[in-house]
Length: 174
Image 1 (tube, rainbow, N blue to C red):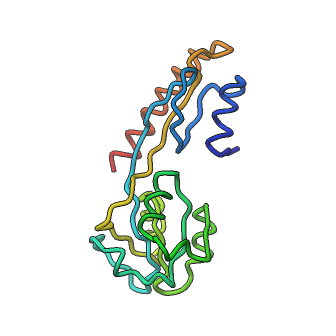
Image 2: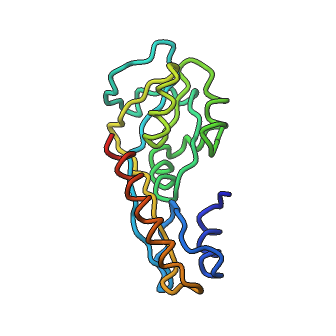
C-alpha cells in the first residue's frame, strides 16, 4: 500500500513502520533521513514521430495550451509557480503516470515529469523527452526510519539494506 509523505512520517512516529520511502524530507530529532536517489525532471511530449535524441528545449518553445500538470513536491511546485507567474496552473492536473497517459493523447501534449517516467513512456513509441534549459529542481527520494525503533528490526533491516543496495546498483547503473 502507498501513502503520502506526511502519513508515512506519522506511521513512523506511531511505531507502525520500520522504514519508508518518501519524496518529502522533514528533518526531526526522532527520524533518520537519508537521500536514496535524485533524478532530473524533463519535458515529456506526445509526438507521432518520437525523437531518438533527447536534446535541450526551452520552456518558451512549449505550447501552454497543451500542457498537463504532473503534480510534484514542494520545491518543484514553488519553482513551477515562479515560472508560470500570471499564467497559473493548467486545467488538467494529474498525480500518477497512469492518469497522465490517459490525458496525453493529443499530438504535442506535454508535461514535466521525473526522468524515470519519461524513459518508461518513451519506450512505448508515442513520446519524446527533452532536458530543460531552465532546470527545475530534481526529484529526490528519501529513506526514513525511526531513530529508536519500538521493536528490534535490526536483523530484518540489515537484510533489507543488502537487497536495496543490489536493486539500487541495477537500476541506477543504466
